[in-house]
Image 1: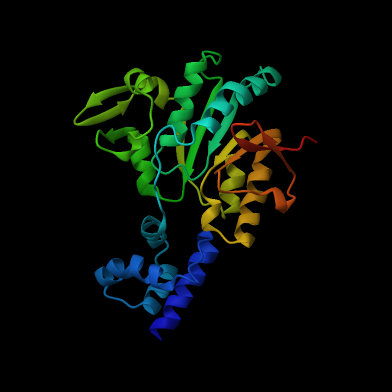
Image 2 (image 1 turned 180 degrees about the vertical axis):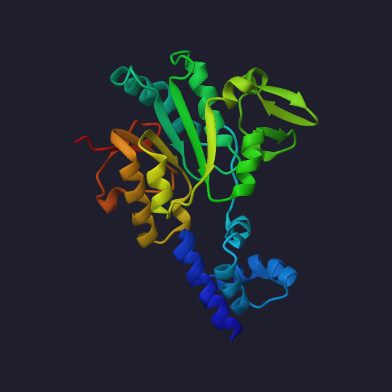
Length: 269
């Protein structure tokens, strides 16, 4: 009964957020152990608990998601976006703000880095670029909104010293991002498999969804890419992690290789 309960949990999790532990049930069991002990219930009973208590999915999301991220991660993509892609889009769309979606943004390092680099270009007036960061994990989004990071955090492992000095102030043993950068970024909870949530997000010019697909099987990967394709405006750009490729999926994207990095462009109508 216990093993069957674990299999049932795995299926529920897969349907909810696309994570599949079928070949890693021992890992799933380990991730859930402390929470089930707190509740004093079995795997099977936890399945029923999730159905009866929808807010428990927020707790489960915290247990399952991997939130390793840092400022200035995979800088070639960031620089390509801010120095090449965004200026080109700005030329085409001068009468409205450009919109960037940082999907699975965790504690906010990626969207804040984009905001800093956009400021560094000195090509975009205030309000001309809007950034939305989303994640399924509410707890990390709360940290992102505070925009404060401990000085000993791995978040600063790659950030250039000039960006740290210019856009952060030292406070309470850590660094606070300044208000100019914070006002460029908004955060909201979003499940990439929830089509209603992604539809409400609206159309965007650029999407960063890096190091997310590596946790999905091919079926879920295709679902997520189709969702991202729908949210991108024609001619918009998609940045994935270096270990991720969608070339074989034939979902309406053209691969662009700049020599230093690669990314994708949604085929225009």
